[in-house]
Image 1 (tube, one colour):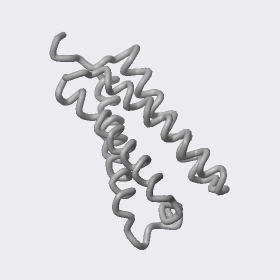
Image 2: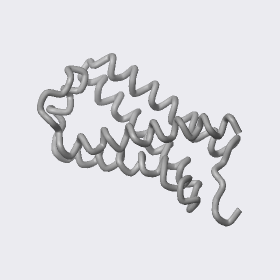
Image 3: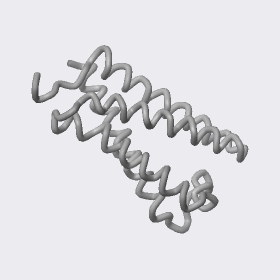
Image 4: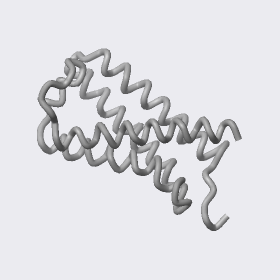
Length: 129
């Protein structure tokens, strides 16, 4: 039971985080911290692709478990966000933004752990059983 609660806390934190960052891609505000200044340099297409993937991934971490519909999608959402984080790390590597790469790797690790835990150890229950 404790592992399920901990996983849920991680899923909620990660889900809300990625939904929030994804929304930022569609309405980049002025005055972002220096660590997020890269947002001003992204192309419109990259904002749409990245923002959409982050919002959908964040929703995928939350909605299947809350609705108990297609709960296996949580694993795919987490893995999809791992891919997004790897792509982001490569993008930041090309720009020499080391601290962002570290953050991307940490987030990818947390998401990979969520995917593995939900797949193998503490699967989410579905309506059908």
